[in-house]
Image (cartoon, rainbow, N blue to C red; front, top):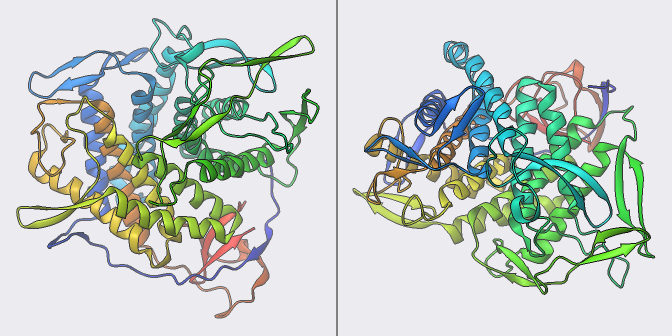
Length: 535
């Protein structure tokens, strides 16, 4: 990346750095284990899923839709969304391996390169879902290569027109490719993630209302007018990550940004990647909070339906563009993942801005999600918090939805006041996984009813198993963070509100507990026992 100056202005946000006990606990009892064991379980589930829910060769890898644990047979072909969960699980395991490298060097040596290679293989075979088409959006008409809902017969031939591609699929893929780049440094991941981020930004409704303000929001897909939580919230976190990656003192204005003028004409200008990505992350966050937050429950609605079903177009000069369609009020089921993406987004935006409004949102969402989505249940004399679960493995996606919320709690934990609700939530996820692992594991696969077992039949989905693997891996990362020292003191005991500090002269740690090295990007670091915000 481009060089950055090492001398940074630090705005010191002093937060007490606690040292919570490192123990896996369940209400009514305690289960002793370590982050390394959680990581081992994540690896085992991932390996088992790859062995049972995938078929074909290294160059023609296909994911089954379902897998029968009794007959050991796979069935159907998974859509791109479940396939993306395989990318996620591998990234989560790699993230945990990096965090625990010193504690488990042999596990790292045995696993890291294998998972890097398999991640690359998964990425190469993602091309079976890719297709190319030309899209007239709100402010541009361009050709795109994106990912269709269904797998094509060969690489690059998937159908992606109309309702055959949706923005949320591109967002989930974008997120994991940014993670993959950060974990491996493979430039192709970053290039593809940037392209998908730009495609999602192109879906932003930049038409202007009577006040000259953008209507905002991203529809479910180019073939839909309805605007959903799932087609907005998921892009926030990867946009902030991309802003981090591209931000540099000498960053050039080399990203073309499209918009609508007050007179309805379309225009574009060259801007810096980091500025556009952070600006769009905030725009999407603000829009979803305004339109889809249920202020009675504190969690997020599913969607806003459209007044018209047909896509509307407007001709400006010789080019036909997509036109705005009004939406109705919020409706639908409050799914865990829609609150999770906004919690993760708030955590990222607070990390890079330090603005208290995001901190307030973090605290509110951490509490509301526990209150709204969990119920207490007693199993064999032990009380658990149960998260939403589908009646059977083939009837819904709550297992993965819960995974999205859980990983958001990992992101939000450092900023949740007193860590109360984030800690309780993460412990509950861990308790439930451990109970299923100890009581119901089949060939290293878990039932979606973690507290009841395989009562709904023998069929599972690789989608769900990969969610469990990712949860275990990210819980390992979380547990590792709790065990880390606060850092070495190199600041005054009571530092001033603003102070010029050369972090290269100090021992600084990132929030994962690993030593931080220059160049330092925006975010929180632990220096001298204090959490400091790099502006």
